[in-house]
Image 1 (tube, rainbow, N blue to C red):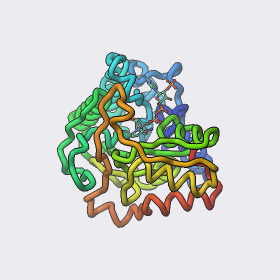
Image 2 (cartoon, rainbow, N blue to C red; image 1 turned 180 degrees about the horizontal axis):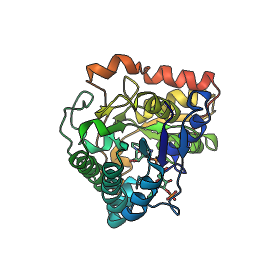
Image 3 (cartoon, protein in one colour; image 1 turned 60 degrees about the horizontal axis):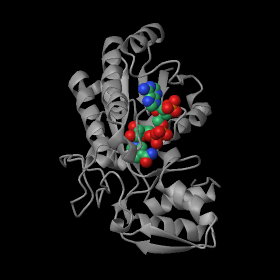
Image 4 (tube, protein in one colour; image 1 turned 135 degrees about the vertical axis):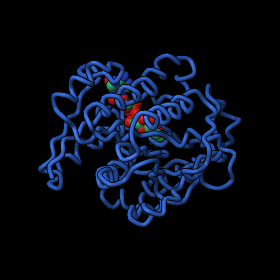
Length: 289
Ligand SMILES: NC(=O)c1ccc[n+]([C@@H]2O[C@H](COP(=O)([O-])OP(=O)(O)OC[C@H]3O[C@@H](n4cnc5c(N)ncnc54)[C@H](OP(=O)(O)O)[C@@H]3O)[C@@H](O)[C@H]2O)c1
């Protein structure tokens, strides 16, 4: 059946992956809308309500948000407006119009003290303001919408062309220097953003609730960059460093690797290991940064 799908934040890193997917013949019958912030701000409930009343979307995918972890410490109002009030507004407008909200959250809601990967049942305990706002956004959406009308996808270290994240930044630096130092005592799971977007469209009709959408396995920032630099044959040495050598404005959790314990989705998602996913990107000629 043809669906009407709104993608918010489609000019951003993750959201822009949905633009190319929308052109796939598999979605030929569906109608996608990619409102820009200047056309439809998620801070504007009346605007959202009007738009959803007119177009009656089946799905609203929220890739909009304030994602700069360090800047969120000093620009708290802005971070809160996008990550909490904006999500509240989207959830209220979805409730009014009957649309299902698919909302992206982050592994950054955890404190990083667990020794294994964080599962959906682990209690969030954010260490920075960005993580706090993202967790609050999750809770606001869950309080407003019935379970079948909400899917929250927590993701970790998405990478791909045009990203403004540590993978893109360090690979860029590696291309113009002899060596780069990369933190070896912080862990997560690298994920191709294109794969995350593809899986989202695949599962959003059926999946509901909270789901950790991620490749399997985990690694340190250093391991991820070492593998990428090596396989891209960039002539640059990657040197392990300690997080205490690069103190950021916002404290970073040590281990925010995530995995899913959702038996209903783990098998059906068939997410590859993070290394395998990287190899597939290389084979397809998809760049990491
Ligand atoms: N990238 C990561 O490392 C990462 C990791 C885990 C989770 N996530 C989550 O994934 C989602 C997408 O992240 P991203 O990396 O794609 O972020 P991004 O590149 O910064 O893009 C965010 C987008 O949101 C839009 N936006 C911000 N405030 C808005 C508002 N009030 N109304 C409408 N649009 C607004 C921005 O529009 P403008 O360009 O006009 O400002 C931008 O297009 C976020 O929820 C983030 O928390 C990201």
